[in-house]
Image (tube, rainbow, N blue to C red):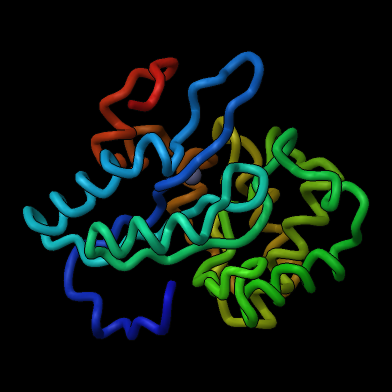
Length: 222
Ligand SMILES: [Zn+2]
């Protein structure tokens, strides 16, 4: 994320969908938060431990707009842990979509993503390596979700990046594929792992690091 990383340089396991920073707190669910100022030591401790024990070679971090995106924090976490991190750009889904998605057409949304990818996210200079995790809820994406998914696909076509999706509660994965491929994105560049919830059982979803998997659903992150 702080420079090009040739595929040949990745010589160990990859965590393909993680959140090292996160803010999904809502009034009814205030605990889905990973804050750099409170949780950095825990996150970097586990990443560096996985590097030493399993040769962890890369983390793909999927926190985008609307869910606590913080590219600067990812740089610090990556450097502290000694593990390369790929940053993401996009918008999440449903109630996490900011007003810009509700008020902007797909072409302009795609332009925002393309600028991120070519020039860096905001003023950070951090260039994302994946578009994600962009999502929807329900079997039929809302109009705003549909515009955002179309924008993600167009940005993927323009830049060569893949698009990783979130199908909330396992619904809508097929509709997402139709939107993405309909906008010209080859199906092979839409990571199916992120659609497993839409098409298969939860047992097929790859477990994440321990700081995520060992907590109960309503237990706060520590
Ligand atoms: Zn995720």
